[in-house]
Image 1: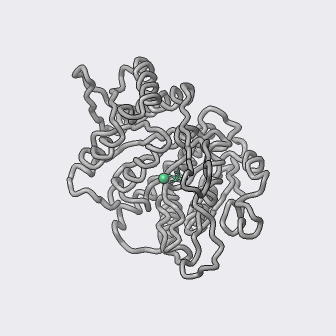
Image 2 (image 1 turned 90 degrees about the vertical axis):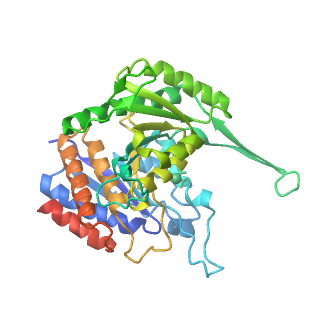
Image 3 (image 1 turned 120 degrees about the vertical axis):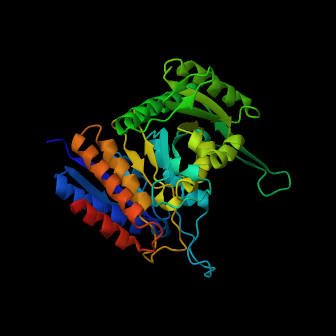
Amino acid sequence: MAQTTRIAVTPGDGIGPEVVGEAIRCLETLRTKHNLNLEWDQFPWPSHAWHQEHGESMPEDALAQLKAYDAILLGALGDPGPLNDPDRYLLTDSVSLAPLLEMRKGFDQWVCERPARLLPGARQYLADERAKDIDMLVIRENSEGEYVSQGGRLRKGTEDEIATQMEVFTRKATNRIIRYGFEQARARAADRSTEGRIREFRTLNGNTCESQVCLITKRNALRYWGDMYTEAFEEISKEYPDVATHHELVDAACMKFVQVPWAFDVVVASNLQGDILTDLAAVLSGGMGVAPSCNLNPTDPDMPSMFEPTHGSAPDIAGQGLADPTAMLFTAARMLEWFGRKDPVMATAGKELFGAVAADLAENAGARRGTQEIGEAICQRLSA
Ligand code: IPM
Ligand code: MN
């Protein structure tokens, strides 16, 4: 039997514990059904409550503790408290969200994968009928770029204050994220081919390919990293003559995501530009309630990857059983598929969970249901 796979469950704040609860319920069902060698431990940190009690969002050795696991399943972070209480315990956004970035950096989770596929039953925000064909994978560089957290404030609080925020792009991280994008494009084309849904993308020389990678930059203004990304993209693309290549400036990409989103396949973007584009992509594919996300380290098996939905802690509806767990459950499905790299039965379980969540979505399009009601319906489907 395969080695035990261990998950660190960190529900976090707001609706995090509620949606994570449904993920655990589904994991339990699948564990029993497939006799999965899967275990998990739940942590009260990182969280707002932990900060209030201990003066920090998580213990000093948090990363060392988490490193012992194969993955982290994270709910959401951030709790602004009851707005009508002026004395509430309040943290700035950058403090409450810091653990997220510490995990991404500390475990070198250099890929952030955010699929955006408009599934049947999901809310279609675009009126154009072709929006039904939206099926892209946005790959966000997750280790550096605009998120290196270097800079500072000088002469703070004075009229002459200066704030600097540095961006750092290394050739190594650039190469690896671009190559990862091409590999995913190939894998997606292969999957589509087995499912009999071929897509076609035109190359500049008039050929057609079954997959595409679109690189996003702002090279007309941010030329140093923009040019380096462009050169790396051109070089690496030569290894993938079967994949069509495309480039968009990030502002034009925002426009085209709305105008012709069905024309995109794999999209590779920098950390911040990918962050912004994936909120837009989430809405194009049904909204935050259905948008999964994962932070992966595909190169170092000793580093846990982290799985969290794209959405935040939604404090306005927290604790009321109203949150849609769909995004969390799609994320958990992706986590199982990730484990499937070592243990094939996990991949089967992941596909099953994805299928059950998608079927539930298709059947209940638009119906108002509570968090647990959705989780229970999906579990019943899994055990049927
Ligand atoms: C996300 C979030 C985070 C990010 C925030 C909470 C730091 O917006 O995961 O997309 O910017 O990466
Ligand atoms: Mn974001």
